[in-house]
Length: 384
Image 1 (cartoon, one colour):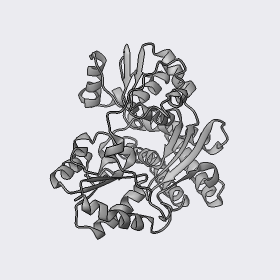
Image 2 (cartoon, rainbow, N blue to C red):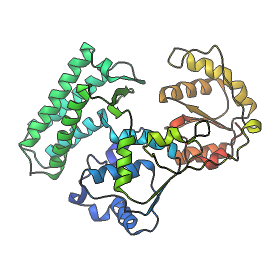
Image 3 (tube, rainbow, N blue to C red):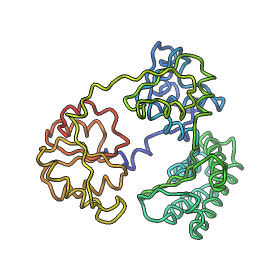
Image 4 (cartoon, helix red, strand yellow):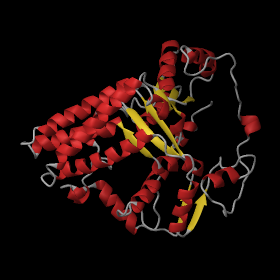
């Protein structure tokens, strides 16, 4: 199943719509069972996102997801500053708003059938969310939120979206206590109202305001310019040994850039030489005369330039892209001009994609550069 299939949101619970202990399936939930096992384990392995999510949950006063530990070890630690900025910032997405509208509709149709205004408010939120996405312009773009909110058509669409969210909040408030699903939706609506108000201000110092959109969805976000102080506070509140490892922590054989970004002022550092023979096992190509990635025809010219090398290598390549739009455009060009199998991340699950790559033996795999972890076995089959 494709990663962006419409089915996933229908069968997936998120932090936003999970009912927690109020859910009738709570005792049988595999996530709850996994957390209970983790609380009793001697060694717990999680990714960076879950660890930082746990930190944020603890700060909010809710129960932790991960038990206290004497030693915390982070592999691929160079990712932590960027991931931490996501958790220490705020985001509001079209998917969150449309999921909210969906849950209001479900609550109305199953538990609060006498409040028809619930359905009307959900429909209005759904429509205003889609209209705001259209007001943002062409898909596949990421830009400055301050700039786009100065556009009159975006301002009008945002006002309608704000009004629709306010209406949902007011209507649900009148039916509190009648439905667990509606009560949870009300809490989310309250959070989204506060979040949208903060995003609209676009004048809070120390934050970057940005947005991005694809064909169907959008993200509005504010991200702290530095996470050093917040991360330092986390370390102070969680005594123990913190170990950060990665092949790409140093700059000019110094760790200062990484330690400053995380506020690790007194960290002990150790720099080990790489076992990889870059001089003899790597080639760097800097193409000239290619258009900018966002200019028309850029993907076509890039594919035309690289096709002879990929064919000479008999496939067996990973092609890493800096955006999903470029990934799709390049895959289309490669499929139109080559007979080699071309696999694209997102068209099926990552596990199935890996199996197809290994089985084909001569495939080209096109995927985002940001998702390049966990492919060790496939990389052994690569020659370029």
